[in-house]
Length: 110
Image (cartoon, rainbow, N blue to C red; front, side, top):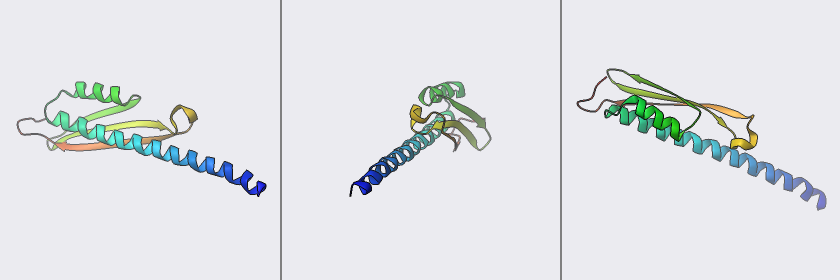
C-alpha cells in the first residue's frame, strides 16, 4: 500500500503539471487569436496600423506583429514564443503564429 502511494502521488503531481501547462498554452493561443482578429478588424475599419500594432504589443508583449494590406483586405500576423508554465519553466517554449484576414469596410481601402 505504501509503495503504491509513493508511486501514485508523484504521478498525480506530474499529470496536474502537464494539464496546467496545456491549459496555459491553450489560453494564450486563444487570447492571441482573438487579439489578432480584433486588430485586423480595427485596421479594416480605418484605425491606423501603428496604433493597432502598439496596442497589440502592449496586450501581448514579446510579439512580432506584421500588417499586410491588400486589395481584398488586411492581414495581421502575430508571432510569439509562449513559455510553457510562464516563468516557471522559462527554458521550454512553443512558437505560435496566429493570422487573421479581414475584408475592408465600406469606404476604407488599402
